[in-house]
Length: 458
Image 1 (tube, rainbow, N blue to C red):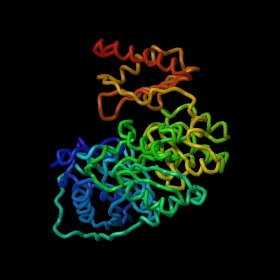
Image 2: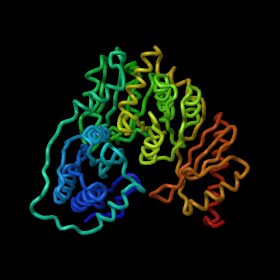
Image 3: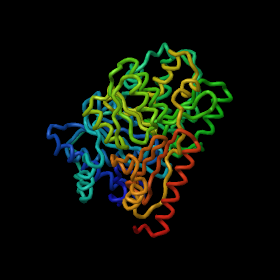
Image 4: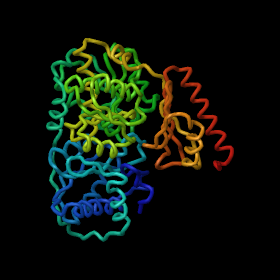
C-alpha cells in the first residue's frame, strides 16, 4: 500500500506512482472522501470524478470510485477533464468533485484535487486533515457496491461557459500559438478556439501522460523554448503555455517575451475594473506591487491574500471579490464559481488587446515597471528562526506576518515564506530598479548564508 502521510499536501493529494500513491490507497481515499462529505451534509448523494491523461489516472480513479460507491454515493464520471472543467462541473451541477491529476509534476507523479459542491475548496485547514485521518483506516470494501456511475460529457457546456466571459467576435484575426504540452489543454483549447475567428496553432496537442516533448510546467523557462520559437518564427500575436491539468496559463508576447503572472493579473484586473469600477480584486502577497497600484488607480478595492487557492477562494467568498490573481499563474473568477481558469484569463487578455488595438508587448509595458527576482528557494533547517533573524535585521522597516515575513521599504519589498513540504525558505523580492533589486538580494542572501553557517542557532 502507498504512503498516506507522504501524499497529503497543503492543498491536494499528490505523490509518486506507485511508491506513494497507488490503487489501494485510492480505495481508502475515495471511501474517506465520501464519508467526509456525508459528515458535513447527510443529504449528499453524488460525487463528480474526472481524470487527466496521466498513465495511471484511469486505474487510480477506478479504485477511488469503488471506495465512493461502497459508501452508497453515486458518481458522475466526466472522463478526461481539465481541473477547471471539474470545477465547472461542480459549480453547474452543485456537487462535490475530485480530479486525478498531478498538475505540472513529471510523469511519474499522480494525485487528486478535491472540492465541495460549487467548487468550494478543500485543503489544509478546510477538511483535508479529516479526509487524511479517515483514509488512514484500512477499509474493507464490500463485493457489491451500493452506488451507481453515470457518464456525462460536459465539454460543450464548459466551452460555452468559458466563452461567456468575452465577446468571441472581438478576438478576430489574431494569430495564436498554444503549447498544451501533451496535457489536458489538448482537449480544452481546440473546443474553445473552434468558436473564435482566429488562426490557432497548437503545439503538442496529443494527450500523452508520458510528456514526450517537455514537462508540462510553464513556470520553468526551459519548457517555454518551443513556444517562444514558434511565436517569433510565425510572427504570432501571442503564445499561451498551459500546465498539465490546464488550469494555469502563462503568456508570451509577439517578441517572445514571457509575461509574469503578476502582469497578467494586472491586465485582467484592469479589464474587469473597466466593466465594474468599484470591484473588489484579490492578489496574493507575492504579486508585483503594480497589481495593487493598478487596482487603486482604477477605483477598485484591493485585498491582499496568503498564497494558495484555498485561502484565496475563502477570501473571495468573504469579500464578494470579482477576480483574484496569483503570481504563479492562477486566475480566479467570481462567475467561475470563484475557481481558477487559465483559458478564461487568456481570452480576456486577447479581448483587451483587440479592443485597445495594441500588441501584447505594448500592453505589458504599462505594467512591467519593477525589477524582481522571481521566486527563489534556499535550503534552511530552521525557517522560523531565520524569519526572526531577518525581521530583527530590518526592524526599522514596515513588516507583517500574513504569510511568512514581508518587509517593505520605499524602494523595495520582499517576502520570505517557509515551504509547507520541504526544508526550504522561498524568497520573492521586488525593487524599483534592477540595481536596487540586485543589492537587496545580495543583502538577504548574506543573512541566509551567515545563519546557516551558524547552524541556524541564534
